[in-house]
Amino acid sequence: MIGPVLAARSDQELDRGSVLPDLRKAPITKMQLVKYAGASGDYNLIHTDDETARTVGLEGVIAHGMLSMAFLGEYLCWLAGPESVRRLSVRFNEMVRPGDTLTCRARVKERTTGSAGRRLQLEVWTENQRAERVTFGEAEVQMA
Amino acid sequence: MDHPPTLTSDIIGRESEAMLFEVERGAIRKFAEAVQDQTPACLHGDVAPPTFPTTFRMTIPGVSYDLARVLHGAQEYRYERPLRAGDRVRCRVRVADVYRRQGRLGEMTFLILVMEGRDESGTSVFTGTTTAILR
Picture 1: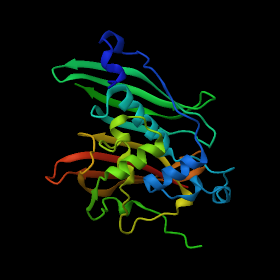
Picture 2: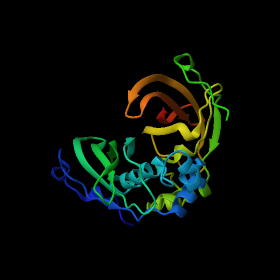
Picture 3: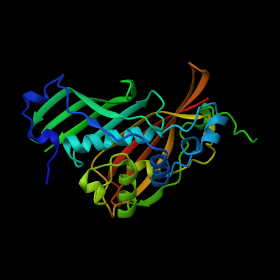
């Protein structure tokens, strides 16, 4: 079994300002948006039907903001393990369209090491293939 | 077309009924597959991905809006622990705030909704805060 990415890192490697490894997701497809609509229960047709999207002034369907946030959720699990995630807070800044490729990135804002383990405050964001931050925010992980 | 009434501050404090959600293994797997989440515990359906509470769809009586006019501005989740297959979570959602603010697209209404999920013993499991922006 492969442990969380950060488990092998020393405290010094997680000091404030440390840039963490990134996670590049596969390009978003319309099929993924249909699947996410079904899995999440968000059936707003602007995410799955181009005609509906155009009636509200969009060029075509846009991804659910929550899909980008879900990528960041996966990213935190990959970095610190699924038992470690304590907080994830994001703003949805830019629209994401099918064909866009998102990469999850993070930087350490604060590290505290105590008897319960290491607690990290992170700046997290997803950026698209044009290096635009589409979703950004903060997270906290508590690692045993 | 039928337009819901503009939301005003008198709805602050309104709350949904409590609803019980069962965290099903199949639903976790379907969610992880849609996200292409590679976390083994999520792909196997044992542990729910962090944003899984978004699947707990709830409404508040008297609070409605046109889906085509709403933008999801921000979202926060705080967790006491991850959700796991077999968990039964009792959720409530309430209107924490409503305010109007001038934005890039003119004056918009900001709606802040807070959802709390508790386990069967009443212990908090997660809190979700949604910022919806109504054009």
